[in-house]
Image (cartoon, rainbow, N blue to C red):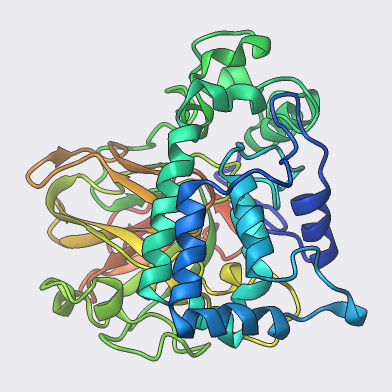
Length: 424
C-alpha cells in the first residue's frame, strides 16, 4: 500500500449540512443499551453545575443567549435546541453514551459533543463563550465525567455488530478499506470474535487500539537523515519562516510560536523554522511515535480551549476544522522536545493538540528517555485531533514528493529528508 492516499473530507469533523447535525443529534433512535431520556430526569451534577455557572455569571448569561440568535439558519429554520437549557439537556444525554459509527468518514458520530456545539462556534458570542476560562474549566470537568463512562465496560455496547456500531459489516468494511486489510489482521485484538468486542474492554480501549507490528514498520530505521510521521494523519500544511509572534486569529497569518509553545524557554531556537501539521480523524490510529532517534529534553501539558475557532463567513458548521493553525496557539496541548542524535536536525518538537472532546493528551515518555524512531510518545483519547512537528531554521529539511496537503501519511512513514543527506 502507498504511504499516502487522498481521502476526501478526511480533515473534517462534522458534515456540511446543519440539518444532518440536527437529525443525528436529536432524532437518532436509541441503541439497545441506550435509554430515552425522561423529561423529568434531573441533569447530571456536572451539567447542573455548568447551567448554574451560566446563570450566575452575567456576561456568560448574555453570551449564551446571544449565540442562539447569531447562528446561521437556512430558510429561517429553527434548531430543536433553542436555548442554553436545551443545550444542557443535549450535553447531559451525550455524557451517558459512547460515540457510534457514523459512516465512511465517521462525520458527526465520532465527535457527538462537537456536533451539538459546532453551529455556535462560528458566532461572535460563541467565540466569547468558548474562549472563556471558566467555561473551559467546566467543559474539562464534563469530559472527565464522560471519560469515566468511556473507559468502563458499559461503553462496549457500541462495540457490537448492531447497526451504527463499530463492528457491523459496513463499519468493518470502511475501516478495512482505509488500511487495505481486514480489521483483525490490522489491529491488536484480544479475541477474534466481534460479538465478544474483539476483546476490547471499553470504548477508550478500542479507540486507543494499536496496530499489529507489521502494519507500520519504520523503513530504513538506521538512516539518521530521514524523519518519519509521528501520527497517522491528513497533511494540513508545511510552513517555513515561522514567526515568534503572529496574529494567529487572522487567516493567512498562520502560526505564532511563542503562543504555541506557551512562551517556553526553547521558543527562540525555533523562530524562523518549519512547522508540519497533520489532522487525525476518529477512524485513525491515535498513538504518537518518535520521528527521530534522540533523547527527550522536555515535556509539558498546556491547558487551553476546546471549541474556540477562528470566525469566518462560511456557512459550513465545521469551523474548528478550518481553524487548524489557530488552535495550535490556544487549545489544550502537549509538547515533547526531542534532541535528535543527528546534530543537523538537533532539537525538534512534537506538539499534540487536543480539540473538543479529544481533550486528553497522554504523554508516556519523560525527560532523559532515549528514543528510537517509531518509539511510543503518548496518545490522544476520545476523538479526532491535530498535531505538529516543529524544526529549527538551521535544519535543512525537505519533504518527500508524496507529502502534500490532502494526503494521508502513515505513521512511521518517511515524510522528510535532510538536504545533502541520504534521500532513500
